[in-house]
Image 1: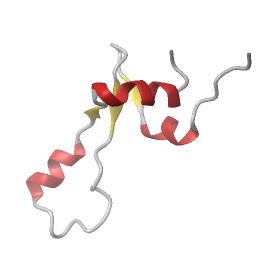
Image 2 (image 1 turned 60 degrees about the vertical axis):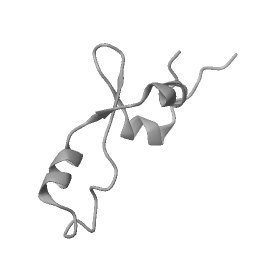
Image 3 (image 1 turned 120 degrees about the vertical axis):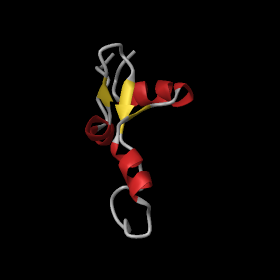
Length: 65
């Protein structure tokens, strides 16, 4: 059985925490920022955690068990 390959797109977008959770960036922070409030932009800056329902798929993309 060959090794599982890591998805290159997922490799760039996700990172792991020490406890094994998957960190992600928020969407909607790249352009058309003038109409968004300062508070909204600030809150989009921080990293989020991948939801429990999506964690299995994200781990498959990262070639984790």
